[in-house]
Length: 249
Image (cartoon, rainbow, N blue to C red; front, side, top):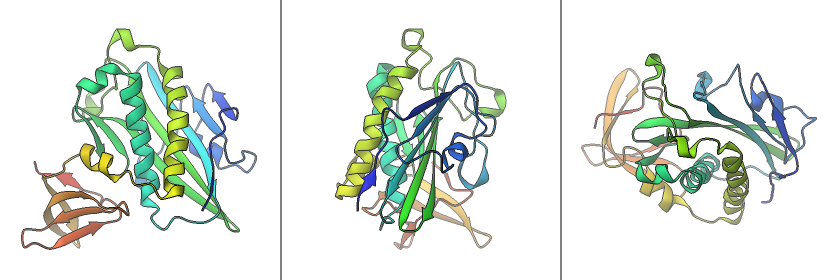
């Protein structure tokens, strides 16, 4: 398998967009293209949810990769992109290294228990070519969170780390390409994910056929699936997170 990576020279900067992912799906934007917007009016999360970017320095980004075939473990794409984002955060924002950075399977980044970044992966197929549209929304800098979004946070509220959006972009782009190359080459990066996995070792709960289920979160396997163990010792595999997936602590 081979991927066409992001081209550092194919960037588009917009002051405003509806959805950067939707824009990038247009055939006029070849693989390798990417968009960075200052504002997004119709941001989308997984499963049709909305995603609001907060603060004085929002990071609203989409990039288009392509591959000559589908992945045997497509869930790895989202996870490896999450690793790239996490590493960019730790590289650009020294204060983040002093916080508890966690990856919530399959595609959110948390700092000190607050969501600071969401990732949305969408695919389109034409002939034998797959387009992978990845959207990244991050709250880089800010100080005030609306009351109705009390689970959200900022990567930094440190005045000394304000104004680093361009540096974050320059750091992230090669890390994203490196993550996709790792998938193409079969390189394993699950160890980093399990080290940073949110709720690992905790009791998780979800609803299945109208009944609440609970299990202990074990980690992520080499295929990107989430593993949990029930109280009777059965292993549960998740390929996607249930709607009400949560931790009971």
